[in-house]
Length: 66
Image (cartoon, rainbow, N blue to C red; front, side, top):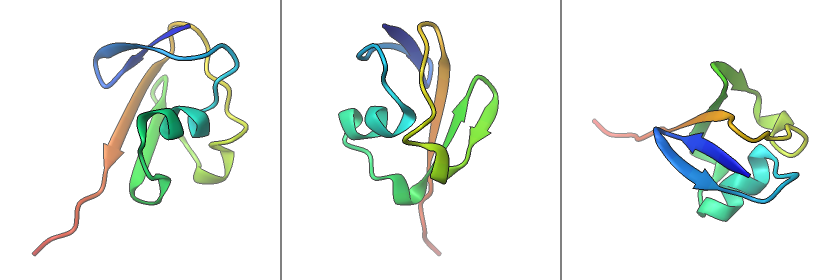
């Protein structure tokens, strides 16, 4: 299936979850926030939140510094 990820189209497997997408992208879930179709996905829901063809995903990385 095809999703819109941070403004770019990405292909992922049917039945993918937010958690499996992060794994596919090599992104650690500890310092990110995920928005699915304009709604924030709580971290405990990453493994059960299914993605659908055409979904819009925004992933924001938190960066520390001073």
